[in-house]
Structures are given as C-alpha cells and as structure tokens.
Image (cartoon, rainbow, N blue to C red; front, side):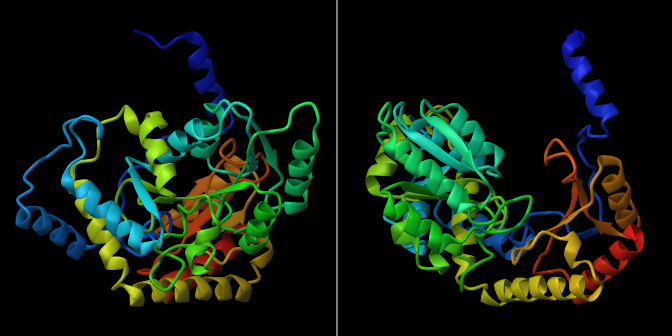
Length: 384
C-alpha cells in the first residue's frame, strides 16, 4: 500500500532541504563518530566474560520471556542493580531497556499535574518526549543560563494563581550535540535554595569522567544532593540499557507507574550480564579512561594549534563540535573527511537549529595521536 500523500510530501521537503536521513552503511574508517568512548563495545574480554558468567551460573536462556513484573525479572537483574547501586554510591538502581525508555518512563510518570518542569532548551529528545507525556506543565530555560532558570523558579513559586506542588529542574551533565557542561555546583545550590527536585541525565559522562568513569556528578561529589541520575549504557559502557539512580521510594514508584518499564519485555540475561561485566571492567580500566582524557586534551591542543578554536563549541568532554552552517556545506566537508579515511558525521538541521549545523567529532581512548592530529589539519584545509 502506498504511503499517504501528506507523508510523501514531508519526505520531499527533507530531500529539498538536504536533510533527509538515511541509514549509514558499515565502514572501516577511523572512528570519530561513535559514542563508544573507551572501546567497551569492541572489548573481547567483556564479550567472553559475559558468556562465561552465564555458563558458570547455568543461565542458559535467550530471552526474558515477559515484562519484569510478570516473568522477566530473572536473577541477574538483582545482582546487576545491586552492583550498580554500590558503584554509584546510590540508594537504589532500576534498570530500563534503553536510555530513551528511562527518560520517557521517568518524566511521564514522576512529575504530576500541578507540578512544573523546567528543562534546559538543549535537553535530549528522549527527555522532551517524556515531558510531553507528563501531566505537568513544562517550560524551557536558556541553555546553561541559571539566571533565566532562577527567574522561572521565582515566577512559579510566587504566582498566586497557581503555586506548583513541586518544581523539577532537568539538565544533562554533557550535552550530546555541543559536548559542553553546566556549572553543576551552582545548579545544585540553586535547586537547594528553592527546594526543587534536580534530575540529571549522565548519558555522555559514564566511562568518561571520574577516576573509574563513574560520571560527572559523582566525580564532583554532588550525588547525594541530586533527586535522580539517569545513566545510559549504550555510550561509554558499550552495551545496551540504562539505569535510574535515586531513593528506594523512587525505585518503588517507577516500578508501579513508569509505563515504559511496566509494559515491555525485560532485557535478556545476556544483555544484563554484559551490563554487569562492563561495570566491573570500569573498576579495572583506569588506564583506558586516562588515555581518553589525554586524547581529549590533545585534540583541544591540536585544534588551537591550527587556529580552529573559534569554530568549536567549548568542550572538555569526548564530544567536540565544529559549527559549519548550512546542510549542504557541512555534508560536503564531512564527505571530504570520509574520503580521507575518517568516519565523521554531519549533524544537520532540523536535528540542530538552522545555522548551527556542525561536524560532531567523538574522541575515543583508542584513537591515536597521529589520527587525532590529522583531523584539524584536514578540517582547516577543507574549510579555509
């Protein structure tokens, strides 16, 4: 059956704007595009240990067989959640099937009808989709602008017509498109000053920040002052799934009310075993995490050396974005880099605002200094 005409027109509009998305083909280019920051997705050791763990514990099962509330809550879940709780110095941990499911489940279930959600304007799509499903009212604040955030808090707390029951502040420790971070100490102080509930997505800091890759909040010793942390495994941990860290009461509440948790089949034992083994590797992979930090520093030094600093969003994370306006322009330069053997992706509008199109470089522990130094040299030649 043919696609409806109005949907065909939407595809045509994407083609005309040079913004049509297509699934990429596998390539053997030098990786500067994946979120596999410390190479865990390629780890033969994690792969083999996960398999052996299942065999040794006689867990010969391909699927979870049902939702965790019916038949899918196999024994590995409790073991993994207990380990993750201790690793992150949290009170409880609840594993979701993906980062999208965790954000959608949390934000659709926790904030209530009389509550207010104040979220950073650059928050991830999964956060925004969860907020759309919530009964709470939501308002965005300017990116990393806490004066704007405080203005909104005061506005809603002083409103006589409708005083919110609770105010939730939502941000990320590293933003996926810019790679920058908010001033987290200041944000925690602000949330405490006005008795707000602070929720932080740490998708791009797990495996990247901290002595053992525990994330930025814990590295800064702010974790006991946060209402909820959402950690995603598909990036630094190199596997699949996510976890919500918070109080035991929050875990109990999510088990009862988070629809993306309740109404879906659980992860397979193999998936949960991989999560557990990957977390155990974080405690022994300090050299790998240190190498990633060194590579990030080296990349920043190289882009400064070639005079490219004004092009880039300021970032100390593994995500480095060079702003190159125009879908056609940025796609052309990305193709030139790919032709030279480097897997670099163009981020187009409408994924980012028009005029903010960019090349997004992801730095990894396994990138060599030679590979890293070639990127700014080639970029300078192609742009100028």
